[in-house]
Length: 310
Image 1 (tube, rainbow, N blue to C red):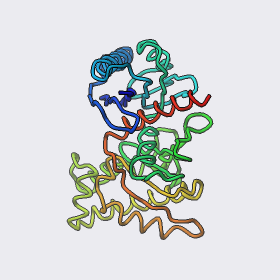
Image 2: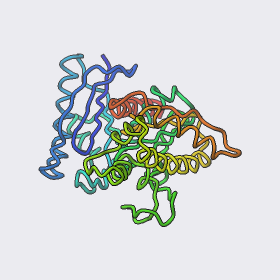
Image 3: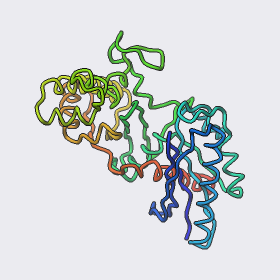
Image 4: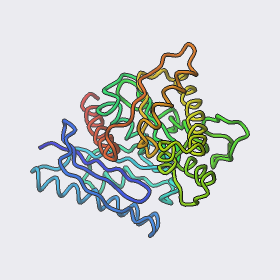
């Protein structure tokens, strides 16, 4: 059976799969990255995991994988296949594509950004329903996006497209790690909501999920914190919608787990801010934590189709 390797590398763990041509998950597995042992150990763990997946595929399906797709966090040079920098993993300038190609017996390897891989899967086979133009926004510890055009993700001229979390929505606001102040993710990321609710509630252990629960129970302090988040998020999203004009806006990440507690006021806030712009469908992500693996698999199959046509 023809299949590809898909690997989604996160800050603490890796999710992997063997994926068929129809995007069926033929085999799934997980491993820790081992980042506490340093960046070299992380690279070794990735290579060993990929080699293990190759062996499983050959044994189970009678032939080696045709290609591999790998999603990693941080700054990438996708053209050269180099993982330039990832703060959570501690690596710099790792020629990951070349290392994987060698370890996997010379098969083609596609390297992509983890959020963009999740966006690719959601736009093409998930909540986006194959929309021609879509915007995927992941709201977790930070906020990042993926811009979908024609069923593919546009990485940008320098590999850094979709950084919606660094749109300044409150000039002079909280300091951001990027060097600006008032960035969207300082006000609307799940981590920011958690901090604001911890301050408002007096519970230092409180997080965004606790805030959402308090909103549902009618706590006015939580309603105020949540309202500030929704207002900032709507401002950032309207800027993105004005520039990109997507048909579908897909929201994923931890904050999206609040369901209609988030989506009902967010849809209303975005609608109120539009003048000439068209309101896209605003929907929750549908693929859960398999999105990154599925996107990496799609990237691998796309690589094969590109090689055939060229």
